[in-house]
Image 1 (spheres, rainbow, N blue to C red):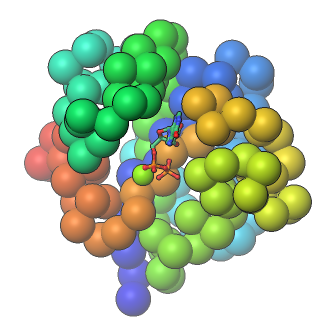
Image 2 (image 1 turned 180 degrees about the vertical axis):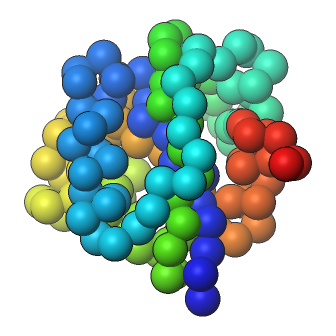
Length: 135
Ligand code: IDP
Ligand code: MG
């Protein structure tokens, strides 16, 4: 099934110059970047994006962090794109992420794990609408 996922290079990834490396890995797998923009998220957008985590102890820190500097927001399309991208990105906690995954190769801390990727078809639809509008 051809799917679309919302993928974002977080402020740490942009600051460390890892945007190209991440996109290269997605493209190398056969996925296609169909939308892309750089922006700094305001607080409302950041809170909405992480709304599912509201009330958790790390909510404030992830919202602060994701709005702390420019991010690169993308829509990436391809066969089973959502699962394929989560595999390329690796586990949430970098110490649990496989070597060869982005987080396993470039991150150590859960709070600065370089990239966001949608975790399901429904979240992908919501996140694409939130960051790129309905069109
Ligand atoms: P995901 O990014 O792999 O989908 P989620 O569980 O959706 O992981 O969490 C969203 C983001 O919140 C993570 O990428 C990570 O940066 C941050 N986060 C998750 N759990 C913790 C935690 O226990 N402490 C601090 N930050 C966390
Ligand atoms: Mg998530």
